[in-house]
Structure formats: C-alpha cells, structure tokens
Image (cartoon, rainbow over all chains, first blue to last red; front, side):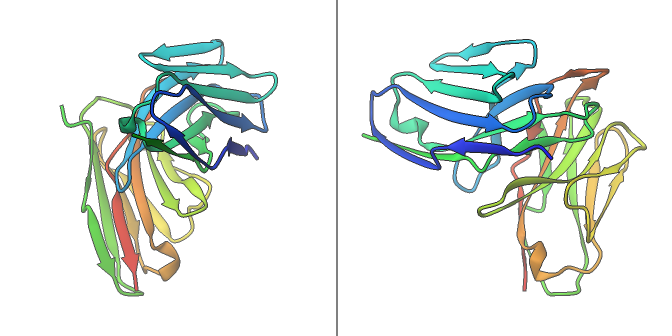
Length: 115
Length: 115
C-alpha cells in the first residue's frame, strides 16, 4: 500500500526566506505527483502537477521536483510572503493506474510565514 | 465556469439518519472522486467513478454508497449515519485518458457532524 510522508509537519519562518517542503512515498511506481495548498476551512487548490516522466515543474515562486527512483519530491518556495501561510499537501497517483487509486495524500506541512 | 461545486456546505445529522451529499462539475471531466479528511489522517479515497455509469470502491467505502448520475454529477449517500462519519467530505474531478493523468480539481467541501 502506498504511503506518503511529509516533513516537517509544521514550519514557521520570517517573511522573505526561501524554504523547502519535503514529501516521500513508499512505492516509486507512480503516475504523477501533485502539490496542493489548503487554507483553513477551505478546499484544496492545485499548485503543481509533475508527470512521472518529468523531473520538475515551476509556477511563479514555486518549484517542485520529483525523484521517482528515491521516492521523493520537494516543493521550493522562493521569497516567502505572509500570504503563503497555509497547509501544503503532497499527493501521488498510482501505482495501479486508470484512476483506480485516486490520490494518496500526505498529512501536510502547516506553514506560517511571519510578517 | 464554477469548477466543482458541493452541497450542502455544512450538515449536522443524528446517528441513524440518512443524507446525500451532492457534487457537480462543469469541466467535462470523465473521472470523479469522493474523499474524506480527518484530523491526523489526511485525505482518504471513499469511492471513485472513472466514467459515467461506473463506480468503484476506494480505501474507506464502508457505510457509503455513490451514484454517478451523469457525466456532471456524482453523489455520496450515507444510509445510516454514525459518529465515525463526522468528517469533511471533498469531491474532486479530473480527466483520464488511457495512462495519461491530469490534475484533480477539488470542491470546497462539506463539513458533516454526526451526533
């Protein structure tokens, strides 16, 4: 059974710092990996999707990398801002494929950016 | 373009009552999903529907039934609610073509309390 772990569980940093959130998964036979943002009491907003054949994806100040063989992904946030405060979730699709597994989620990293 | 919508947003039930959670998407996606989110557990897949007319169990299907009414709508029914079903329920949709997977888009969630 696929398991996804996110480290750290919580992180508090001053505004302006660059930071890295980590995600690891136990079965490397994934189809894609998705990073989400969740604000308190809200739904999930997709940030980045990395297909299994890709190594990284970038969107604005966000960069996500994927190393399938080692079962790891990182989300890099540059020049953090208070508006980045949220819970960040990592999720993988697979290994069965065809949508049969849905997404397997980590428990998230709760991020606070101090003004 | 509303994306994924869910009704109701909040619901309180008594043990043994029944209810149906509604979900609809206007993105012409073929696959739809129901997840539940519990503190300390992350999101877990309840049921999914790869296409209209098909449904399959996910990780935690017990106590739930689903109906894929048409391509747009996917409902989740609790026949006899139990306190263990107190949770936040999210509906999601995506496009799947063969082995190609795309982003999952999530609704805002339904917060259900069973007393």
